[in-house]
Image 1 (spheres, one colour):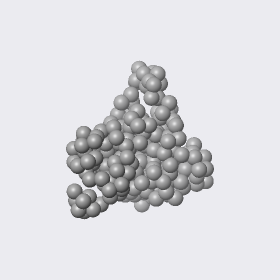
Image 2 (image 1 turned 45 degrees about the vertical axis):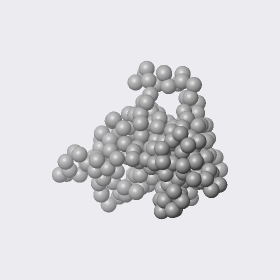
Image 3 (image 1 turned 90 degrees about the vertical axis):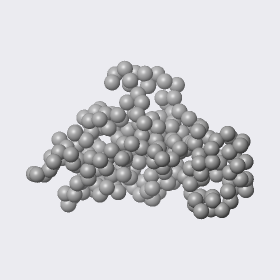
Image 4 (image 1 turned 30 degrees about the horizontal axis):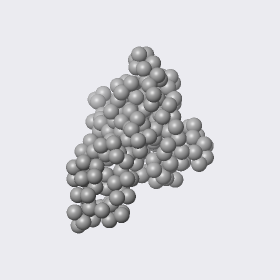
Length: 231
């Protein structure tokens, strides 16, 4: 662990993890949340994600944490329980962004179970991401969320925001953290599409397959039917 931390802090891309590169509206789109909701997670009286100032963009590690909070909220976790859980994990791991740490992937669930004891009769495969009514989410559900990230240097360094089946990636080491397909920002492909170019022209220029272009356009909000109609 110490070696990985030392290596990442000496890496040329390390400082990019902390640069305010993502607008709240972008973070909301990537995570499927509303911009006002993402802002509230940072700016409420007792924020679940502290550290971001008014009108300040998010750094990559903050973006990862937004992705996890969005997931937890959809799973039915109350803000109060989520705040307590994050604080507990941050203190246990002595880290600023616990949801972005590899330790959270490998040990965090067990720590949460220690912090929020399971009710009598539970199997142990359940994890406490419960709302105040005591509902439980399953370990397999959390596995789906972890599957969206590739971990290197004990950090979630590559995000698959549209799932593993899509070629879209967000990696702070590539294109300054913009969403990309095969290293090309998705916004550039969307710009070519908006200019009226065909998928064949875009594919030939960038030497990328048809499906990669489709992945980029869908991520940028173009409907599949619209893509198919142009060809």
